[in-house]
Image 1 (tube, rainbow, N blue to C red):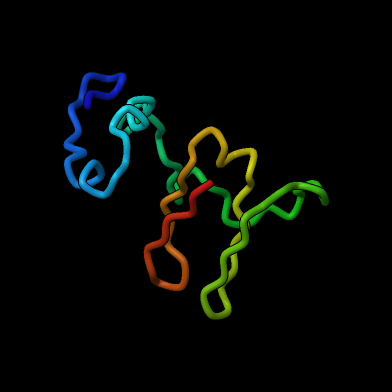
Image 2: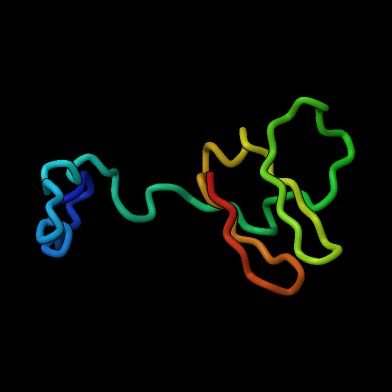
Length: 90
């Protein structure tokens, strides 16, 4: 199949499992969204609204909250937490 950006995808395995290849033809393609990076995510912001929807992540004593409205335009935030690389997706 071919996505909207013209990239071709091999769905032979999915078809062998009974999936209809026609159902895969609606994607917008690879790299369609620019992920957020640590440089673009505020690590500490005490002025956030109390009812802001967030995705919370914790690694040991280190904790971080990612704003859902901010993630909705990027879908993924690539970050480091507790010395480990993570991807937070929405």
